[in-house]
Image (cartoon, rainbow, N blue to C red; front, side, top):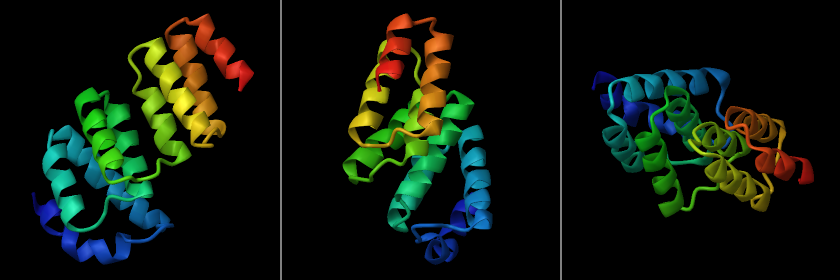
Length: 146
């Protein structure tokens, strides 16, 4: 709660297209704490109020949620990004692939990344991981065709 109370003071520095490494690391640490404490809904409300729902923050949020295996928080962030029309970065698409729980979902997320022209190394690696994790030759073939 103390970290969330300081968000307004940090908001001005974080309202940038290209945050510094220190800014990104601090946001990652706060997000990790939020995920660990199951406070994503509250955190997203704070981010909204402070104008911090942006491509780079959404990428960090999705990466932390996916890394923790928190499907509900991942979907919450995804819904908010969609509602606010935040364009997903390649890293955000990769995080969504990592959060996939089934091959067909991973395929849909891979196609969404392709449609958004976000196919980069991180997306391909995440897609390959899904194809391996789900032992899905159809997904592997789809990756090869992109």
